[in-house]
Image (cartoon, rainbow, N blue to C red; front, side, top):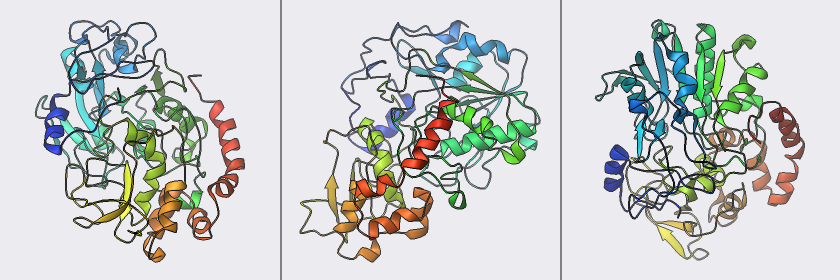
Length: 425
């Protein structure tokens, strides 16, 4: 059963704090939102052992669970971690945060760096994440979102080795891979080794979208890759090094702790929201396509309980659409587009969403806008698309097939490059 939408944001706020959830998919463990039974997980508790906390045969074992592979690398070292709410070690009953696991194993943990949305994953998209202290462990929390996107020399003075463990969703404008770049660069400059604990890419089975043009690089896309890149965090780190994308062509000393029983065709259900507005499998599958609405004036479900499972705006034709909704301030979206306004559009929460990228939703919204000048926030759309061409193609009335045909050469070139850095089939 796919992870269903939480009934309300209050309930979610409670659940994200206690989170007794597990993996689910063909090759992993399934969470039943109606109860807390764990169907097929067989994992040891790392709080009392330094052995692999590996799952049973044919289930995906995330790298964080393979403690025997990375604990020896931490012995006698001062350690920093780049982590958020998804950085967990799975157990027979629920999970333990990686930071809590390392503390329980007497690792000399000095500090935690937090990406967009913060250490506990409660900040809005783009919201400034502040430095602070973890109330549970007393560790310093340092933000990597806002003015300081890259660990400074001063912040790394008492660090001998760094760990990066964040769940990604495989889309270029999802900013965790930009955080990865900055962390690798900082570590390379200070000669600090980086351990990457790999996790599955839930959209890792395909590659699609326009390749980023260099002149449109930003924190929403730093490298010349398609919108959907089909790589895990570990594979992407190898590409950053191999393609000399760090400043002055420097390379980071990385050790990738690999997963077990994962391949790029594995379907994978995230047990924990990777960010506040990706609440379930449906939203994650639709995110590559509906994420483009972030560069428009059309609401993509923020301010509802169906984030990235619907789209609409007051200026879409209410005579064309039978569905409407009203965004309100809620968890993860304090100021949603068209707050408290009736939005007309499309509900995708119950469709059988395919694991692929499509332009049909953006094209549909543009074609059925009563005032087409209101659709695009041009600079922002270009930043998300990675090219100024896509908006022009949509406005010119090109079909999805015609637009996608213009991406073919770029995608094929990327696939050839990507192949050099793959870890999993």
